[in-house]
Amino acid sequence: MPEQQKHNDAKLSQNGEILVAVATKGEGQINLHFGHADDFAIYAVNNTGIRFVETREVEHYCQGGYGDEDKREVILRALADCVALFAARIGEGPKAKLAGAGIEPIDDYPFGLIEASVSTWFSKRSGKPS
Image (cartoon, rainbow, N blue to C red; front, side):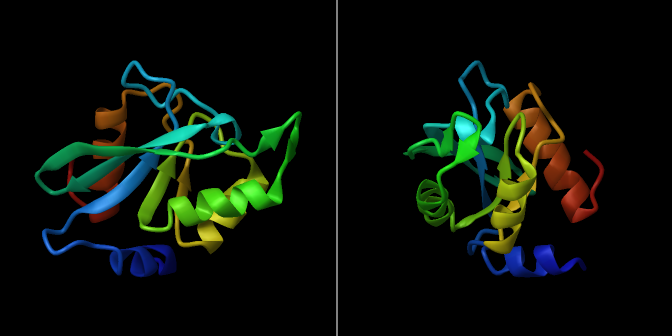
């Protein structure tokens, strides 16, 4: 089992749910760059499905091509209970910071539908066909 998954398995709830964050402008899509997000949609996922939990507001950290480190740390704390973060694009620096905080950065599903993309990722992660 990969080290990241071992760390993230500690975030499982009693009913086997994990939380994931999604950078979205709406329309049910993963359609926002990580650095431009003012909030993240939080979803709970388990073997039986996916459900929306809440929206967590943050200040976007990307400021004209440069990241504000203080704002990025606040975002990491706001998403600390999440196993993964889905975004249309995530820069290499933020990817490393997210991974270091135990949050898997995922930009493999740009403009994909949230529920279908998260379900596909979860199935691959848990070794079950989607």
